[in-house]
Image (tube, rainbow, N blue to C red; front, side, top):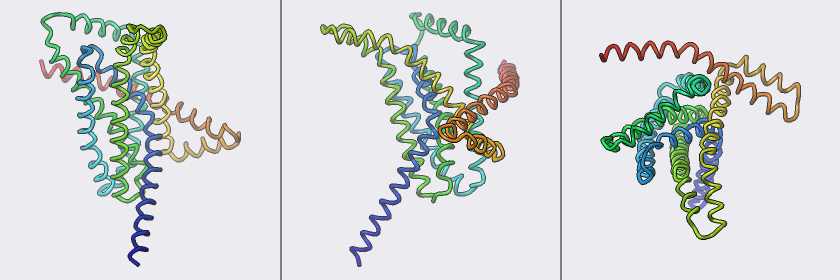
Length: 308
């Protein structure tokens, strides 16, 4: 009897772990839209930092990211337990924020690209001045990156919570914790690799081997394009994921898209909803940017006036 009970316990544990594994994979797929943007943003945060300090800065931001998730995961489980009706509105809010952020980035690229380039140039020139305290610059960058991470982490946790909201509190906590750790380690491991990619390429160009030098030159050529690609893919994914969340939260639109795609059959049943989600996300983001940007500027102007 004891042996049978033990086997039954092992079977239950295996079943739970299998369920957690499947839900973790599902949550990871849904949060993929945030990750490309997360990688690009965090890699950009360490630009302007001395090469010898890049990895320590990434590690400091990673520790801040773990602290963010240590707050967000219990908060998400508490919301699911005490006010479960709030999960869907939070999920919709997270989807809307993804769409807004993607549209804001797109608008900024289209209308303010020269301003950004000038600001980056001024920052690099300022860093060359001997009286600039690089430790202050570094701490400011770390704080800014951790604030950015908190917003992106909140989006990831909200999306993950939407996947596991029907499960028990224990399963919810485990899945949220696994996703939080997995994404933090994965993102900041890749960020560390990305920011040191040019150093690796430079190292290879100084080797005796002709092949190593060729590979090094290829890496140096690839590095800036990799950053641009991550930013582009991340922005597209934000519209797809954010739009998908919003569409699923509005049943009439969701069912209309599914019915339209079903008429075509085949691969179209997958492609049409995906494209529709992305288009809906783009339109929703554009609308939110048009409405919220003037309000945010007014708020910023009032805040500055209050400080003065």
